Length: 69
Image (cartoon, rainbow, N blue to C red; front, side, top):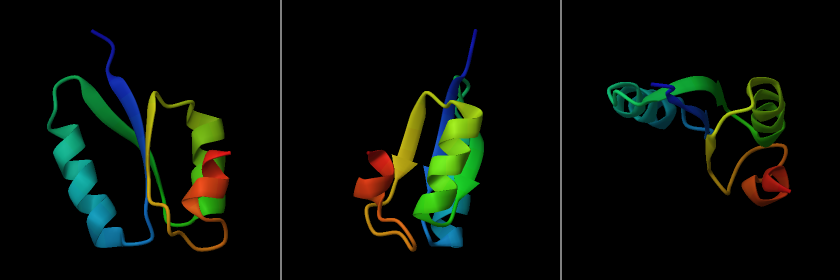
């Protein structure tokens, strides 16, 4: 079974860590990358080609809405 690949983007490291722990406990999901700002989120998503991106809308450098575009 292929796992759902997830990127987490939020500027709060504790929140990212918590989401990573929750997601990685699911048998069909895995976190493949994390980002603390919008530019890094775009870079990580481009490099890892995830199935899902969990993206905060308020991020440093580039907000989540612009990063989604």
